[in-house]
Structure formats: C-alpha cells, structure tokens
Length: 114
Image 1 (cartoon, one colour):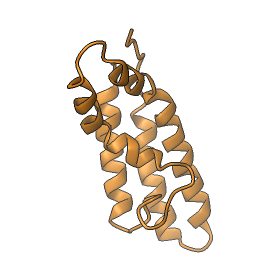
Image 2 (cartoon, rainbow, N blue to C red):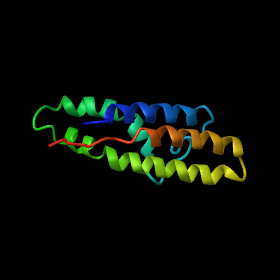
Image 3 (tube, rainbow, N blue to C red):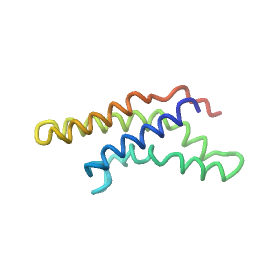
C-alpha cells in the first residue's frame, strides 16, 4: 500500500483547489470519465468501509490495487482541464494546472496488496 495515503491526501488538496473555482470535473454536471479525482479524494472512506467487510478483504484489495490506474486517470483528466481552459479562462487553466501538479507529485509507489 505504498503511497496510497499520499495519493489520497494529494487528491483531496487538488480537489479543494478546483472546488474553490467550481471547476471540479463531475461536481456541476455528470462526468463521463467517472470523476477519477473525486473517487481518489474519497478513497480513504471507501477503504475503511471495505476493511470493515472482514476477510477475505476482496473489495479492499481491489480498490487498493486500482490506485495507480486511478491516479493516472486523474492526472490525465486534469491535463485535459488545463487545455480546455487555456485560451478562454487562463485563471481557471492556472488553477487546473496547479491541481495537476499536486497530483503528479504524489505518484503512488508499488502496490503490493496480495
């Protein structure tokens, strides 16, 4: 589970940066990508609930094993958000880029769940 705590913390910070400008993907209108940043920001709560299931902890293991892919999806989505706003709203583009940098700096480590 190396890096999961840091990724969740970074996702929460990045989401807060976007929430302040009301540009978080999926917050105002449904996100066709499934809101990977929001899913990562709430992963701690989900992992707690999955751990409470007890053995064999299948849902916990699946969620933890998916952190690397979810992180990559969130970083990619934030990159798209930067491009979306660059010409029309440079202030929003800068905020989205800051969120992308937060997430990119929190790359997860190895995920040994099994």
